[in-house]
Structures are given as C-alpha cells and as structure tokens.
Length: 338
Image (tube, rainbow, N blue to C red):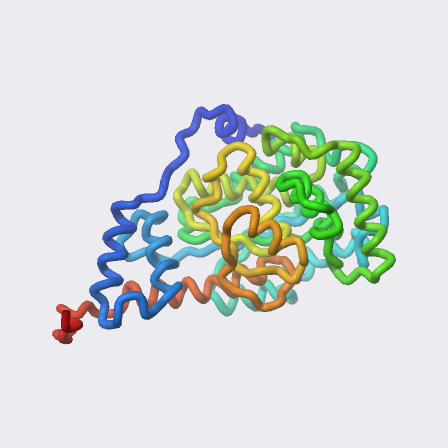
C-alpha cells in the first residue's frame, strides 16, 4: 500500500486546517440571540459553537455522520494479558457484520453509518515485550488505511476499535507519552482477575524497559507499542483534521491512539472531543495530561465506539437547539431588561 498522504503529512508538506474563529464567533452571537437566557443550555452551546468552527458553517450539520471501527490482533495477547483469546477479535468482527453488537444498535439509534474495518487479523503484531510490535512501514500502511477510510462527505467522525489485548498496547503508549507509572494506568481490560492484572503490569513494565519512553514522533512510538487498529485510528484522525471534520473519540484505546499524534503537533487534536470517560483507570490520567474533558461519564469500558455513538446524540441535541430555535427578534420576544 502506498502511504503518500501520511508521509507528506509528517514531512510537513500538507497545510493543517485551523479552527474558524470567525464562524465560531458568529455562532456564539447566534446562541446569545436565541430565545433563552445566555448560557442556559450550558455545554450544548459550547458543542454547537465547536462544530460550527470546524465545519465552517454558522449552522453546522450532522447529515452524514460515520462510525469507523478498526479491528486488529496483538501478539502480546499470547502473554495472557487479556481474559479472552485473540480469536475473539475475528468473532466480534463477524458479529458486527451481522448487526449483533452494541455498536450496531447504537449507530442505528443515532442514525450513524457504520463501517467495520478489520486489518490483517491473521497477522497479529509482534509481542512488544520482546521486540517492536511493528516495523515502521507497517505503521505507515495502517495509518494510510485509516486515512483513506474517512469518507469525503462525512460531517462528524465517530471512532471505535476492536482488538483483544489492545488495552495493553494503549497503556504502554500512554505510559511512554506522559511518563506515568504503569500501575496507575493499567486496568482490568476485558475483566482480568488480580493475578492476571499483576502479570499485565509486569509485562508492560518490561516492554517499557526494553523500548524506553523517549519518542520524538508518532511513528516510532506506534512501531514499538501500537497495533494496526491503533495506527489506523491515528491515521483517520489526521484525515479528519485535513478535511476539517469534527471527531468523537471513544474511550481509552482511541484516546491513546490519537494522543500519539501530539508528538508531531501539540494542537493536532483540537478537532477532537472525548466522548466519555472510560472506567479503564488509565483514561482519566491520560485526559488530565491532555487537558481534555469527556462529554459523558457512564462507567463504560466496552470500546467499539459505543461511548462515542452515545455522545453523538448529545451533539445532535446541541445542533437541534442551535439551528432550530428562534431568535428574540424572530419570535418577537422581549429581551432581558438591562
């Protein structure tokens, strides 16, 4: 696979679009003119203005939201860091295709087009406690796949993943990025018991000792600790930024994947929102480092893009009120007495 766009992006050959403050200010003015006390819709107002600034529309839309769920297998799963075997990744992909998973129901509810993208499931990444998970060329290929998967007509991108043992990968990436203690970031994933969790912690520690924490670019850190689905998520985040598409990131794994990009540009995630706070314990610490707040906190840790699909309903509410409400002038309602 050619990976021209990703290579050009990291070479600095592609201009990165910025937030349209002029349109956002116009959207803020509209919010202040709607038939309500200023600020009374709270975060909904903030979300609508954020969408307006990225879509560069006074009245932003959610006519074509897409959910991309990338799936990949991890060599580290052979070390017993998950409660489930790696073949569950393939089985869940089949479940997605048949419409039987949580994300299928949530996308139907939220009127989101769902695409499930398995990436070389018969070719797991290597055990990163012993060697690098992927060669850099493999990272580029997975990122380019993610980049190419974002539809041009998309006006909101919802991201999710499936990959047995990918919380181990996400934890290692996050520990390396933010220099946080392994024990604080490592969670139970798919349901580890106490002994299994201790083993997972020790395996991540040994991997960090082997590969280190000092990385200068996203490709290097993903090469050491990443998965194909994680690299693809990062690539899709880049693609959305270049198309000025707002992004909802799902929980811990999606956040870790996107976070790798701050090694290239600290502002690269400005078009992203964190959909929910995962109950995976490392997520809150990562968000604190990123200085990002989740939209929801529902004690979720499923993945699949489930939290992001639910959060999209909040964005729909934000746009419905922003776009549909009358202004005081239109409704001939008396404004506040100064």
